[in-house]
Length: 111
Length: 114
Image 1: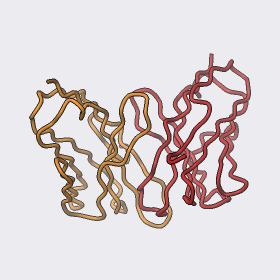
Image 2: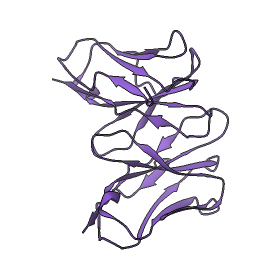
Image 3: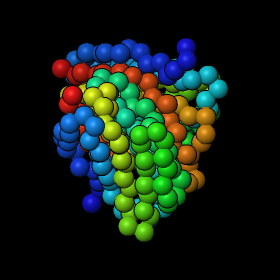
């Protein structure tokens, strides 16, 4: 079993839809949880950052972490064509360990 | 510049050749990371530096891969005797906050080994 599992999609939705992306993980030591967005032929850019469990909201984006279930989610409200990209979950433990990424989910929002 | 700069953006080489990939991090960022991303996959950790020293090189796949950061700023990833399986996008990232995952990535160096 990989440390981080993420369904690669692709996921296609119409403009204005609510999008739900998620990842599961196996390492209970993970404490930092991130979502990165990657446009084609570009480097990943940090979208959301959460420490430990809970929710975090930033505009149309909400990140949720459930450490008891080892499950994290990213919700996108009122999706826009500009949201079309690959979304990567990433996580790390404390103490100098590397950031581990999921495979990424490719999202396409049609106008 | 304002962001992480990587050169070359594209590199095509022949099997068995030596390759160097360069990364110039954001000024003031002490942590620097190298990742490799194959098509349809997420970035795979290779090595990270805190200052001049390699804090964790556990992701380097074998001894053909080596990275240096002699003055604590620019880093070079070196690949000897390249193989077709080394073809990927090599991503560099830097961060100000150590160990929290808030990484700033460059656009990557796309390596193709023929």
